[in-house]
Image (cartoon, rainbow, N blue to C red; front, side, top):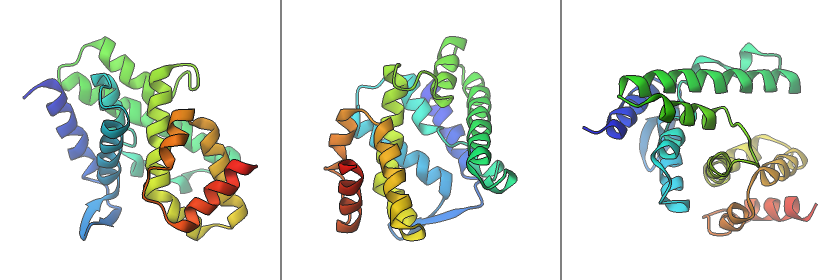
Length: 193
């Protein structure tokens, strides 16, 4: 087994412990395992020639996310940002340990951690590519549920913020996703403002 197969196997094993479940295609999955699979699939479609460290970062983007619940932080903007900062550090620590056990050198481990910490977003091409994939996965798989749970104005605001994080190529890619008419209309409103 090569390093990548070993690391992905450990990432997936770790994420299989997620007590939160999600149905997809008539099958139940641990939520973060399904998210990891979607991230890998989208990266392979959007940038199939990505370097190995980027494919690893995509696969472990949310590793262990359930271990730091949102409810552990104040339910305001500041609390949300604190939670997100702690999550990034948590993901990077778990991923780094797994990559070291899988035989990766320190340079590769640091590249993966750099991406998980979202360093130099909008300036580093690898960080931007990972962010593009994150945004595309959100729009394709999670936006419908988010839109159903929130006021339209909030959804449009979140879409606007999401689009601001995306490259022009990723924004163009949105038109290729299988989206409902409602979501396409909301995206259109966000793009127009």
